[in-house]
Length: 467
Image 1 (cartoon, helix red, strand yellow):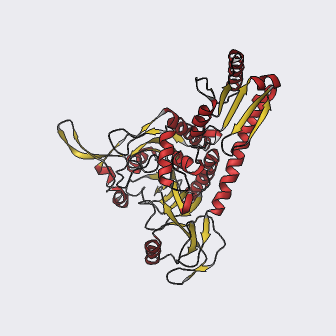
Image 2: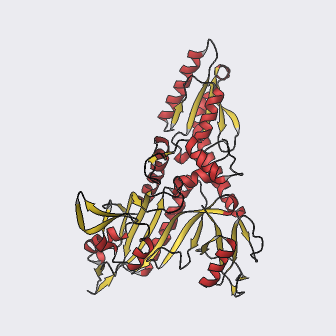
């Protein structure tokens, strides 16, 4: 690594993505990048953990078309207002101009809800719980950054319909449980912050952002959960017949996360040597590096191949690096790739009946008995996941500073008093050049005065530098 993470975070991030070969940005449309095999495997495994949790909670996977007619897109005025500067429009089919323009989905409410109006007829059809993992398209006007700020976005979104506001609220609470389980696989900590009125999702009753802390007071929004009430069901006429025969509009929720999950995994865990991947999402969990000596090459390679086969049979994602390179060069390459556990096997190790190991995330080294290496590797991978999660949540607690003045704020995520008035909130953002993330969804003990007007409040507000 040329650039240190602590010295130039942005440049370090760009360099690590390139060196680890997670994506190829040379596609001739800016912000529409190519997923390389290694990066795509991380994304696919993350997707599978999402699918696992959604399927377990009785969500049904669907796949809706990419194109949305302008007539449908306009039905929710607040929604189109929020995306009108980001939408890609299709105006022609070959040489023929279309009678009705179509947009590439920036998100899927206006694609899915006309069909939901056909699917939902009776209270027995509810709750309707669906999700899809698709690409969305938004014209990003700021500088693009791999996985974090792109124009073609790999996106998970769940969409649900419910009989009552209370049932929809229960779905929101279930989404928080799903989120916690998915994030455990990535060892990422996060805040749940209710967005301001001016920053909530267009058309939502309220939005809860999922924000992860990064260096020097930065945060990255990984996803969001929205309660819509009837804000979409009314314009799209999604109704059900209640038990008493009356027609009522459904209450709706959505939950979305994107490929930023990969970007945040890079940004949060990576160090000056390269990626640091949690074992659950690492394409290669264990790499075996044979330490070859003259006259003993074949014996060591046979033992290394046997070790690889034993680990593979036990379900470990393992790779044997048998390239003709020096061990030091191999160590360097696999550290960049972030492989959680490296095993080394040489002639001395064979003689002593052991296998040496090195843990990527903290650099610890040691050895396993060869007879118990398979069991020991599984235990070590579980330990790595546990330690990475514990360390991540400790970092979250130290990333925040509570302030009572805007004078010389520290380079941390800031926690402070705000009265809730937009004018005061906008002034805080202007004076600090930070973005207000919102207030904690889960109530925190707090008492302070608004930093601008001095009005007392018992609800803290968080602000950070956005990535």
